Length: 246
Image (cartoon, rainbow, N blue to C red; front, side, top):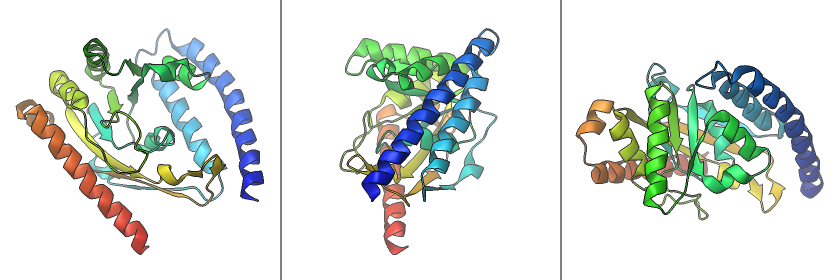
C-alpha cells in the first residue's frame, strides 16, 4: 500500500513542481531587473517548499529556538546534512538567504535552474580556487544583508551521524565580519525507505545560540570549527534521545 501511495504522491509533486516552476519563471523575469537581493523569489521559494510538507500525509515540522534569530543581521548559517529534504526544511528560518551547493546540482533540471534564479552559490569542491570563489560570492551577498547557509560537513551523512566540519563556512564568516548561526536538523534522513515515502515522519530544526561577529573575528578558525562541530553533535544527540523517549 505504501508503494502505491508513494507513486501517487510522487506524481502529485511532479505536477505541482512543473506548474509552480512556470509561475516561478514568470516572477523571476518580472522582478530580476530591480530586485537585487532576489527577495521576491526567495519568498516564493519559501511557499513552494512549505507546500511539499503540507502535501505529504503526516509530515510534521517542529522548530525550536527561532527567538534566537536576529533578523536585522546577515548570518552564516551552519547545519548538519542528512538528505535533500534538508533544503526545503531549512526554509523555516525567518531569514532571506542563499545556499552554498556543489556545482553539479546546478545542472539538474528545474531544481538547478531554480537555484540559479535564486542566486545561490556554487562551489567546485576539492579545489582551492573553488573555495576562494565561493567565499567571494558569499561575501557579496552577506554585504547586502543576505544570509548564507552552508552544510559544513560538505555532503550528506549516509549513516546520519555528524561528520567532520570543514573550515570554509567559518573562514567565510570571519572575512565577511558576520556572526555564525548554528542549527541542528533531524528527520530528513528518515523521510523515505529506499524510494518509498515514509508517511507520518517528524522533522525537527533547532536553532542554537549564535556566535557574534565580534567573537568570530577574534576566534581561531580551526578552534571555532571544532567547537561548532561539538555543539551541533551534542544537540543532535539530545534531539535523537528525546525522540526515542517520545
